[in-house]
Image (cartoon, rainbow, N blue to C red; front, side):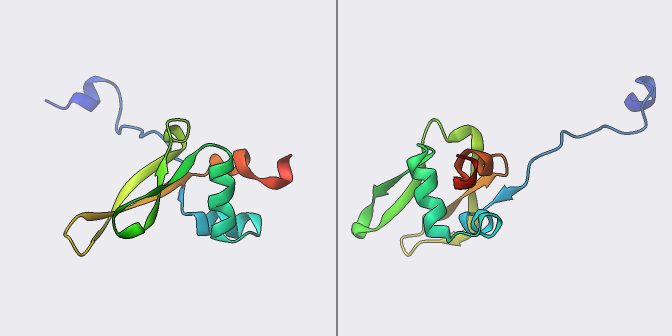
Amino acid sequence: MDVLSNLGATALIADTKEALLTPTDIGKQLGLSAQKVNKLLEDAGLHQRLQCAKNKKIWDVTTAGAKYAEVLDTGKKHDNGTPIKQIKWYSSVVGLIDPGNG
């Protein structure tokens, strides 16, 4: 039984997803460094800097930023074996932090 033909369709249409961007990608769009983009994201309350093991600082998405970001596994591991994660931001976040918009 062909479910799609029963529905009168030949294919399913997937939702369009926004592009996922690193702070470096966003910086290229805005003419800023990745460090400045991270500061803008922090100032907007979208992520925060946390202190972790070995006195390293990491970025963590806030509740407000969760709808604009995905935390992805890079496929790499820390020395202790835990997966290395990376925050990627939906392209819509650019409008929230663009210093030229204010």
